[in-house]
Image (cartoon, rainbow over all chains, first blue to last red; front, side, top):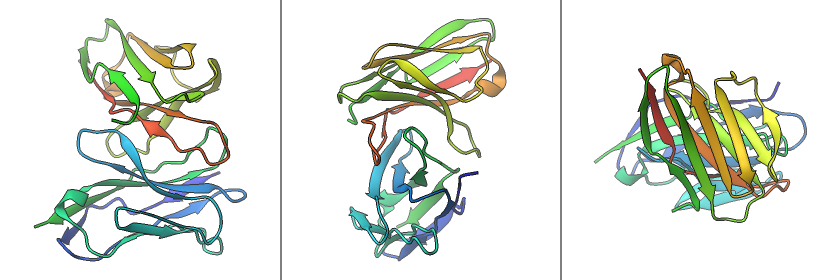
Length: 111
Length: 113
């Protein structure tokens, strides 16, 4: 069945460090791909998305590229801030109403 | 402000109580969702409504009863819950397209004693 794999964390980084959170998925066809972020005490909000192969989504300094060959959508940021501390979810959309969420990756950024 | 409002934000109830969670979206979307978020578990889809018609029910126990009176409002009625039902319940909406993003509310934190 459809699935998504990302490390659970926590990932702990110092401020201004480079961030990579890996995401790989298993799905039929070519799903739209999303990264959502959940700040403490809040719901999830869209961070970025890509809808076809080789598309790059970007927002707030975060980037991810839709890699069809490796079925991956890794999230990167060149310089993280304390305010980026949150839980990050990679979510392929595998059907009209179906989005596959994992447990998310918790990021902690230390000043 | 995401355009999706959930009330109450926090709820504590006993196993014999009956309560309801409410969700309202101001985005003109045609699909609404209930998700359950428990610690250390993947986000779990419970119900989906499209234009007030239920399109998904992922084997959710009958002690959870959804209601969608119109495309802007969604309720989750709760009765005789178990302690393991304690979780964050998230409402979301989307405009149904091939790449429609989900817009989430802030969630209702439920504790069952």
